[in-house]
Each structure stands twice: as structure tokens, then as C-alpha cells.
Length: 425
Ligand SMILES: *Cc1c(COP(=O)(O)O)cnc(C)c1O
Image (cartoon, rainbow, N blue to C red; front, side):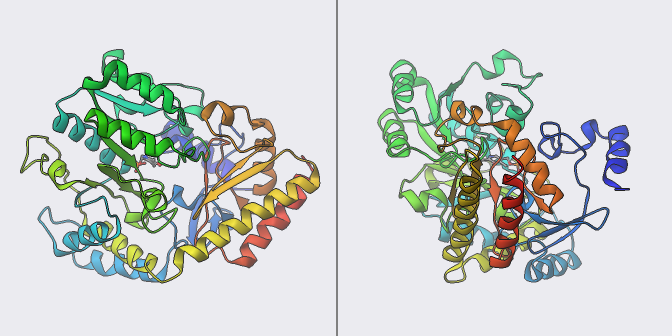
């Protein structure tokens, strides 16, 4: 008897839905989530001791694989010196310097404790800097769970069919304009109509919360130009893509410079962290130098900063992203070939260590197209793979994550399992 259903039953008694974040639930695929006891490299082990190849990677942070010895050592050393001080530390300067040195659009950066805090504050800062109320976001992009951003906001909400959360009064989102991803014409129209009122455009420059959807050619450049022309700020939410798709995020791949960038996930190496940064003149509007308030008891936590610094150091090894991208390419092309051989309509896409699998013959370019994929078939694929020891995210609206620990043997084992599963679909 597996312990997972038993643990799930027990969790349901004291934790809403049995999970501490809705994307962990198996509600859309069915069954009980696996309760993970430990992880190492590309693998997870559940409460039964069953091993899984992991393509969730803690939803992004685990780019080096789980429990990388150098990251674990950095955490242990930091923890032994005290868990939190509530005073400045030298390590905070080091991680700020590391981020500023790596991401060209970031001149100054502030640390927070999650991606949600980073985007929430970046929006407040954009409004404070411009003195304007409205923000533009795109359908299917998730920017954390702050009220004004929780409109048509990607995977968790999509999986459960709620366009917008209950508990958000309409007044709180009256200044949020929600447009279609990859449709520049609608952004032009929004600026024509509301230009002087728009503080910022926030976008996932590669969308990773409605499965994976890449920006169409000219989309990001068009956003940049519209923002510049109308005096609005462009915010790249690189919480997922930062240090995931390449050493400088999407802005490194495209050469397009946002005014503000939000980061989290990888920069904490698995510990809770977030950051927002950008042009110095904008960042100087933040307290204590400027009038836009933001604070955090655990911001810049020494243990999280140590994990982040160790991770960023390892990511700057020469050739790291070339090797990671080659792994992801091998996975994606191998899955596509095997699906084709089995006659299953399937496509896949990737950037660096981030990938999307679609049960549709063509790669989607919008939320509407992602929603038309064969979700029921994905669910069968998901469970077939799980039964064969491969753990993908439990939703057709999620992207997947490859780590540096996913070597050729791990990818090949995944492809063997997929071949068997595709044959049953
Ligand atoms: C994960 C994510 C967030 C939220 O980060 P949390 O740390 O979960 O609050 C925001 N934006 C994007 C693009 C994300 O992928």
C-alpha cells in the first residue's frame, strides 16, 4: 500500500486541499499528490521510497539539480552563523553586485522574500514613479497573487477554471487592463485610449505560466517602443525566466531592456527570495530614499542569500547554459519524435532549461491556443509517466524544468518511458 493517499487524507484534515500552494494539487489530473521526502540531483523520492525523475524542479529554483553539495554547504555555513539579523550584511551587497553585474538593465536592486512581493512592489514603484494609476498585463501571465495582478493570471487559476480570484473587489482591479499575449495591436489601442494614465506594462517575456508561450517576433520590441513613446515603464517579470533561459534572462536573448525586472526562484537556489531592480532613477523612489514604501522583516535573509550566491556562482561556469540547453533540446526533440511515431498529435518548445509540451499538432502562441490542447490526453500522459517514475507538473497549463543534473542517461530513461506511454494514448 502506498503511503501517499494516506498522507493526502491526513493533510486534507488540517490543510485546505491538502497543499500549501494550489499548483501542487492533483485536482486536474486526478489522484493523490506524491509526498516527497527527499531529493537529490534530478530525482525525487516519495514517502514510499519510490524514485521519480523530476521535471518540476521546485517550479524553477532547482536549476543545478536538487541538494547541490556546494549550495547545501553554503546554507549550512550561513545557518551556523545566525538565521536572521534584521540588519545589513556584506552578503547582501555581494548578491546585489552579482545581479547588477549579470543583468544589464539592472542598476540597483532590492531583495524581498518571494516573486509575489517583487512584482507587487515593482507595480507600486511604477505607479509612484509615473504618478499614473493604470497597469497593463496579459492574459495567461502570472505575476504572483497580489490583488491587482490576480486577473486572468495563468496556471493555478487556469487549472481550476477561475479567471480571477474571489475576494478581489472590482475596485481593486479597475486599473488593470488585461490584453491578449502576442497581440501588439491591442496594446497600441490601449495606449491610444489610456496612454496618459498607464504607469506600466508588466509581461512574462517568455510566458511560463500558461504552459510555455514564446513572444512573437516584434512583440517585446513593440512593447518597449510603446512604453517609451508614452512615458510608461516596461516591467519584465523574469521570476521564472531569470537565469533559467540564459545567463541574462529573456533580456539577454532579445537585447530588449526593460525599465524594471523582477526575479525570484533561481536567485534563492531553493530558499525563499525575490528581487526587483532596474534603472537607478526609478529605484531611488523606494523608501528610505524615496516616497514609495516597501519593507520586509526577512528581506535579504542571510541563509537565502547564501544559497542564491552559491547558485549564481555555479551558473557562471563557462558553457553552463549551452550544456543545459542541449539537454532540454534532447528531451523535447526525443519526445516529439516518439509522439509522432505513435501517431499522437503533439508539439513541444523550449528555451534554455525551460520547456513546454503541448497535446496539439502546432505550438500555441496564446492562452486561447493553449486552452485548445487535448487536456484529457495530457492527463493520461501525466499519470502514465508518473507510474513509470517520471514526475511532470500535474497540469497541462504548466511549463517544465530541466536541471544541469539531468544528464543523457536521465533524459534517455525519460524518453523510454514516454515511448511506452505514447503507445497507450
Ligand atoms: C512563480 C512566479 C511568480 C510568483 O513568485 P512566488 O515566489 O511564487 O511568489 C511571479 N511571476 C512569475 C513569472 C512566476 O513564475
